[in-house]
Amino acid sequence: MNPAPSDTPPPVPLSQALRYWLRLGFISFGGPAGQIALMHHDLVVQRRWMSEKRFLHALNYCLLLPGPEAQQLATYLGWLMHRTWGGVWAGVLFVLPSLLLLTGLSWVYLAFGDQPWVAGVFDGIKPAVTAIVLQAALRLGGRTLRNRWLWGLALAAFLGLAVFRLPFPVIVLAAGLAGWIGGRLAPAAFLPGGPTPHAAAPAPAAPAALIDDHTPPPPHARFHLGGLARVLAAGSLLWGLPMGLLTAVLGWQHDYTQMAWFFTKAAFMSFGGAYAALPYVVQGAVAQYNWLTPVQVMDGLALGETTPGPLIMVVAFVGFVGGYGKALLGPEHLFLAGALAALLVTWFTFLPSFLFILAGGPLVESTHGRLGFAAPLAGISAAVVGVIASLALLFAGHVFWPQGVSGPPDLAAMALALGAALALIRFRRGVIEVIGVCALLGLLQRLA
Image (cartoon, rainbow, N blue to C red):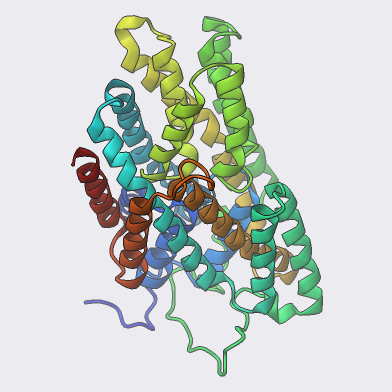
């Protein structure tokens, strides 16, 4: 029997949570905003594993960090519910399906990329992705932009990226400062769940959650200096041992060793997600190391956009193409060389994300309900909506005018994107369903 809306859900066994995180890893399309919206629907609305405020409090911390915010949010929530191993498995299972799929697709791309059917699938998927990004911006905005102050921050962030080309860290810092000032001038507008401009009466109380607004942090989520030291020591070993082994066995200049070092640095360049890190990745992987070409980077980005998991998993494509193309294990082991490179760069790219959560989570839990911490993060959350909207506009420009704005528009791509947007937003069709239909239409158009 389903519990009544006012009942607190029963405790969630770790095995049940792990099944959910694995399922999420296979269906988490739509980029970070779509992934976060999916987790919100599943964990806050449907399963009631945690309350809206606790979810947003964790999200705001993850938005501050370099790295994939949706994967970090999964790690944080898994850690909050089931201690360290719960967080580790939540983060791993969120990424694992994407790594496996992208490794297989990278091999298909290199082995069969010149086939018309592959090109046709790409033709159909790109407009669908444009619609998915738009839907993600709308969903996150509907949940985050509760009043005119936050709408103004979102608009300012959109103009900052789309018009003035400001770096993402500048927008984050400015939004955090604006939130801090706003928290002093208009505190109610920057409190989580604060008033909306059209709210005539208080909203009804939300159903009870397993981890509710006033649930105290569990013992493992309380800050202890010894716990922080253990996390940092474990992280140092998990980074230092494989790096030392690569250097000792292959040498510092070997491509595998350089991939490990390069993607460690890239992990700290990804404030705002994969798009913020891509210029750095492209400059190093293409110009410095010659692991792949600029055209291959663009194709890899399209693959990353159309597979579940964080978009930063495009680094697995970069590693696979580098290991495969340079035959790092010899010409008879091309796939193995690429797969090992993909695994290697994934490890060094995502390791810092786990450390940020496991080391910083207890400190974040101690700030729950404090406006001094919540107000700047509310400003940053609003700015991220504008950032995603600007990225949707940028992506649409490349898809609809593939030869540049001076060239003719791709009317077929526009029609596909419009149909996908209607299916997603108006008729609420599933992301996987929409991507599959658009891929099929693109294939039929190419083969016609």
